[in-house]
Length: 178
Image 1 (cartoon, rainbow, N blue to C red):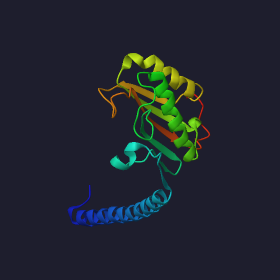
Image 2 (tube, rainbow, N blue to C red; image 1 turned 120 degrees about the vertical axis):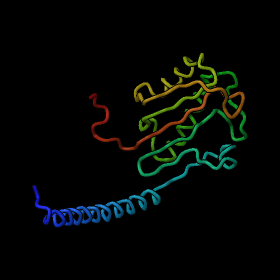
Image 3 (cartoon, helix red, strand yellow; image 1 turned 45 degrees about the horizontal axis):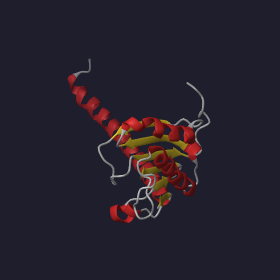
């Protein structure tokens, strides 16, 4: 047990040690954060497809920061917003993957870099048609994938909307089963 007359000194020393550590950690962290923030903002690439809603809503078809690419929800629509493949989930999905492929290519990536897809459909009973088109694109890549039913998409005739995420130059451990 520390004598009471020394307790104040011990507390003072511990407090000063803690403050010194916090100052060092804080200065290192803020430097790292500033450098990281500068790198991220300098390497950001917004990719537009000329889609009907991009200007109205204020979004990009895809955004690349460093080796990460995020592709916005994509529907099977032409530049005027008209649906391609009305009533045909398979065709819509194939058209969507063509658009996603162009965005990936413009970002310097390809389907092999895709690590995740999110599929939204207004009719989950058509999962097999959608899944077939997804499988034709990703059968050897096998990204993490989600398919959910939603009430409605931006255009009444749209049955499918897909988002994708990609990481370029995956780590050497990629492909290993753990």
